[in-house]
Image (cartoon, rainbow, N blue to C red; front, side, top):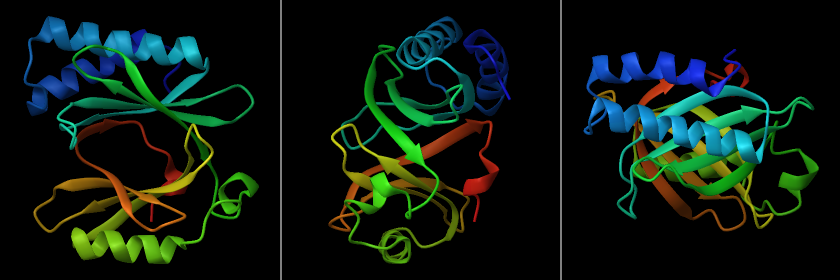
Length: 181
């Protein structure tokens, strides 16, 4: 487990550059990722569990998805603009669809959400996360890998079953083994 954002930057930067995942200068990349990690740690202190670089979304922004586990064991996910270093979304992760916060709003099962995602992006589901949005709504974040190896990160509203966000994951450092399918 990675303990500080500086250690994460030192690990992520060489890996990202080796795979050519970033289309900006090395200095800008390192500073922006550092800004994102620092911003997330200012909101919720804890251990960084995972960092992902996502391609531009429908809104046209490249992002880092940063997951933090607090001392109490709660996990939080932050979306940070990869160009500005600003956090623009925060969600709490819960263990399952049976968690009280998730269950309170969910009308669509993980199976139904998965079928929706696979209908749009055929492939193999790699990971499912159960998230509570900042407004209290529940959503599934489903990672699916197509036959060409592209990993799509698709967020599905657990009340309506509608896809609300799609990204392509370019790289990931760290992993939460309990979410693998």
